Image 1 (cartoon, rainbow, N blue to C red):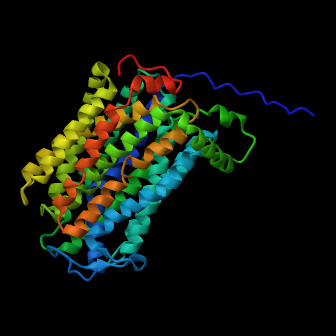
Image 2: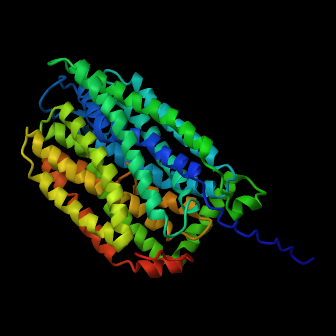
Image 3: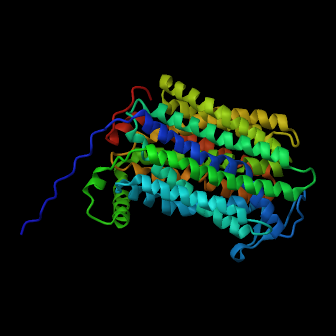
Length: 463
């Protein structure tokens, strides 16, 4: 008997998107940016470092601590515990996120996947209410769950972007999403700033630690609550593979991922762009993630100074994302991202030279970061959407998310190793320069228009 040929299901025509749907998409950035800002950028690094130092036998409020903790019997300097945790979480996401993306591409119910990942991450974040005393292991476990779930949710969220607009619209849509996210993250951070300012007691380090813990918990509540609106307003956009159905979504997702890994060599320019992104964005994420630890441990700045600075970054990043989005309309997203990497290199050099116990220079540098932060990330996201073969958005964003929004790997590992060898956060910071220099060189070498055409897509008017 001859083999039966199953007719291919045509990819649905682009249905366009409503303003309500795009608003729902923007609002998920509003929801999850609370985790990125309040938890990752400000409170978690100093909080978990302090908890680890307590477990290492250091006194609360000590200026320095050379003690070590021993998770799973491995000796780790208390100051390196948090950077190592970040690296471990990203190592795990290498296996998790591409699978999540493949499942999303084959599911008719991507919103359910978004809900599962977001609410799991939010619940783990709220679980920090139990991280008291010397429970550094519990804090580390909750962070791993929250950060991996955060990345998984963003993979599904990003996979909606190609369905929200055409090639010439995505830079603006992506930039608005980042901008709205910075507003949401900034608003919660402002509320936490008020709480820390009003409730802190001079000389009461335990009160400061408790306030940091409750600020982390508030981000989980915010994340869960505001995720309800995107789940209500977004529409499903099933791919051809999802419409064919006929199998188990999870097992089919694994099979599809295997096929994609074998076939991805057909898109070498997309891979080259992804490599460039993984390198330079690893540096960006490391700066964001470890800025508060650098400020407290090396520059000896007060927690309130750090919060005000990050708050400044958030609101300037709102304008910066929109401004770089406007610049991209004139000179192209590719050139704009390259320009932003030059500015990031200057930021690292300036941060190395910052004087200790001087809040004003730190705040000025934070303002400079804010102006380039949102735009460089938003435009990288929209530029990558042009390089994805149709119907594989989730899978490719799964690889992309390995180094996006708090999931850096090599940067924190390098930072942690250098600190353990030198006991200097400044030297650790300098080690991050290589990520921006190499990332710039790799991105500059990508023939971006040819890469978009090779992926089967139509290039935007200006690149």
